[in-house]
Length: 348
Image (cartoon, rainbow, N blue to C red):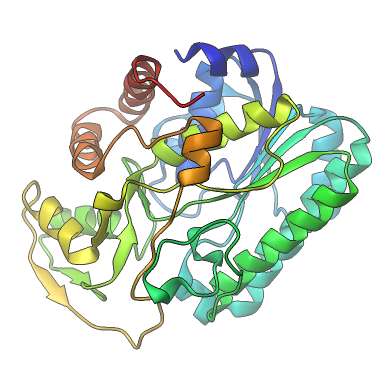
């Protein structure tokens, strides 16, 4: 297990919001392996099946609270009882198309939920490291095709993207008033075993294969920064470690190497080599940006972070994950990723 992260998290009280989701489940298991005392706050899993249930994540939690992150009374009570050293805020509405269908909910969950959490942390009146996970879609000019940097303008023409930009502003405001050390983490288009959400390529491909049905692809030419879920999660953990040391309370990108900023069609072709499905292209009405790229130079140079698994490795890991049991496969890949990270020199 990664020595520096284990030293940072062992015995720490860590609150994870959104722990019943795909990324939250992976993160909760990783934190448990690092020796953290994990409290989870989230709605019940929104998919059936779910990684949270399949991997029996609840068994590694010190406390499992099922609640809406907008419920200020519950959030305040959980924060008070957990007295967290670290908060990793993942609870959110996460799908662009859902934002078009229910824009008010996207803003309410992503903005009001973040405000409720950060206000509860503020009232603790003690040191606390907070990583607010937003999105690579929080930038205003993503469709220009260049790689977005942390100091680029925030925005977003669709409700989901705009809500994530607003979430960034909320976090920056609470960072200014303290006492918590607050950073934001911008990543997206993660893939990995156990993702069961709708409108995402990998779980859609798995469902198509199992149902002997075609995979519907809406935007085959759209370019996205694909990466295995463990890449950005390692960034969140490294960022929290730095926050505990009194550093890095600002915005950070966690994206793949430029070679893995690939069209949707490229990912589909790679998956089709492993699983037998047909593809049906069904263009949408331009609801999502045609190009999205991230510049993660700052995280590489200042945090010593790097995406350890490239796209091809990520796909192989997904295939291996589905060949095993959810809990064992997840823990095995966390261990493998940690070993590889230990063996790779960083910029620190």
